[in-house]
Length: 308
Image: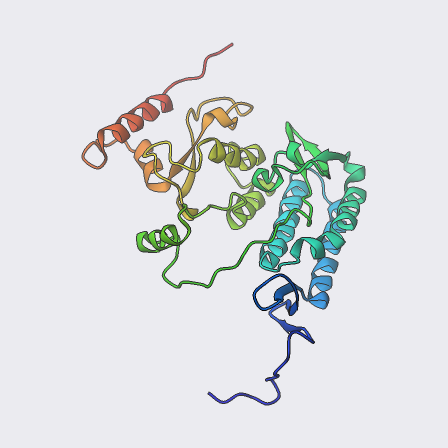
C-alpha cells in the first residue's frame, strides 16, 4: 500500500495532538509504566458544530404543540444521546460535554417555557429512564396527559473504555452473542432508548397514524416494563437481545387510560409474542413451563375488563 504524502503525517503525540474521526488524541504525563497516559477529547471544531446544530434544533421546539411537540423532544433527545454515545470512548468526554450542557438546558427551558415547562429532577421524568436514573440534576420538562417529558442533558455521560472490535460479535446470531458473553462475562445490553424504533413510532403517533393504544404512554412505559422484567422474556424467560423485543398487552381490552400501564405490559421475544396470539397447539415447540406461561397469557387475552 502506498501512502499519500499529502494525507500522511507523522506526529509526536506527546508534543502535539492528532485529530482523527472527530477525536483529538494526545499523551500527557501520568501514572503508568511509561510515565505517560493517553488523553482523548472530542475535536473542538467538530463538537462546536454539533452543539450549534443542537441549539438550533432546541429553539425550534417553540413552534410545536401537543403530539408534535412530544415527537420533537424525542427527536432532539435522540440527537443529544447520539453525540454522547459517539464520544463515550474519549477519556475527557464528561468534562468536554459538560462545557455545553447547562447552556443547552437553558435554551430548552426558554423554548418550552410558554408550554408550561418546569425544572424537574431527571430521575422523576418518564422518558429515557435508563439514562436519567441516578441523576437528580434538574432538566426542563413538560406535562403531557399523565406523563412528564424532559429534554435530556448532554452532561449525562460517562467515559466507557473502547474495546477492539471483534467482527464475530453481533447481537443477531447465537455465535455472535456467545462471543460477546465470553469476552465480557455478561449479557449484551439492550439500549432501552432504542432510537430508531422510538423515533419511527413517535412520528406515527404524532401524525395520528398509529393504533390509538400505541400512544406516548406506551412508548415510555415499554422501558419501565423491560426494566421490571430484568431484560428477560415473560414467556420463555431468556434474555431479550436488540431487535427481538416486542411489548405485549396482557389485556388488550382495557380502556385507553389503563391499557398502557406498566402492569399490563410484558416484554417478550417477537417469536414468543407470536405464540401468545396464535390459536394453534404449540406444546410440541416449547418446554412445559413455557407452554404453561403461553396458555396463561392466552387466557388473559380473552379476559374482559371489569366495569366499575
